[in-house]
Image (cartoon, rainbow, N blue to C red; front, side):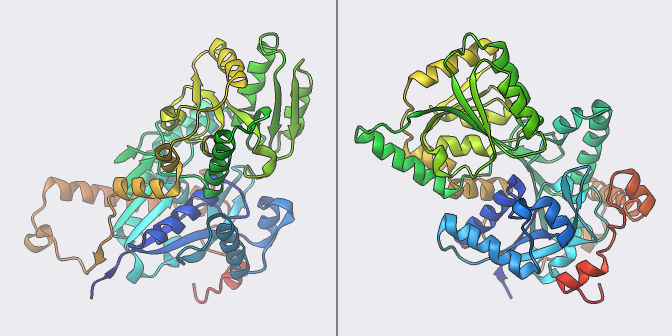
Length: 462
């Protein structure tokens, strides 16, 4: 019988870790469910308590997946209001300290039954498939869509022997996305080009930021002073998240920027170093621990300065624009989507950075039109995603045999498919050897979940 197609979204992080791959896939699942054309399941990593303490803020921990699911749903509803319900499943995972990332354990395709294996969305497909060993994604699911979130090559280049590592990683990423994805969506041209990929920003902003922007617009239209604070930046406080570029610009142009007052907000391993560097400047630059960007402390800032070039599409830039602020950012592929917004000012040189910053502090933001506001919303992002992924609502039926199956005629496409399957077989074979996995950076003993994870997830006979 025909039924609604099922979309399963797999991602590499979960709340309460406030990272893009935890937040954006959650909103994607919620708004696809709201669109109503599919049954939707979000599949997120489950960490045992030892890893939870390493990853989640304020030493938060959960005794069961159900407890964490409750937290995730409450967090979402506080920001969106009631939405149609979707499923949340968990897969076993471990935290890699050297990669600062969560990696899957075992074959995570098993979290979804074959009956519901219609469309898979792999958020960070390279990350989810580097060490995948088990059922081939394209065999399990009728269609597999990858969404590339992270500019891994840019991060790796900053490490020791970075350019050699980036060279190898580039080919590994192309290999695994080719054999496991039918199509890949790159959020911007700042990401690595991979086979069968298209560029489209399929992310939106938390509705709260749009509401803040509407409030500011009303205040301006009533003649009230809306923005009475100066400039700020918010981001994870590690040097690679734009702090290197920002402090270099401020240090080199202290005279031209005299009078600038700026606050930096973020938490991370480089907090103390960033704070010490800021204190050495002859400018009023203050450093504070991270906060939620929707916190009322940020509402009255007028200018958001973000010189980062390691982001793919910077979420905080989109949030600042949604709140009606002026944004100063680099003329870089990661910011291409924001060029259409009148309050986004991009610099290509240090001289332009200084001029745009001082001009922004002296002028008022342009009110955001309804059309521009919609472009930033998750409703618009979902429309873009459905269009570019080519997954318009349809009913799922049992596929008919193809002509090649009926007549045993091998055409060029069939040969390409056979070569791809052979390549997938090679990857699956390599990823099945513990020694090979460890050489390429996998977490030891991650081929199968351990006894503790099986118990926590309720696995039996797995």
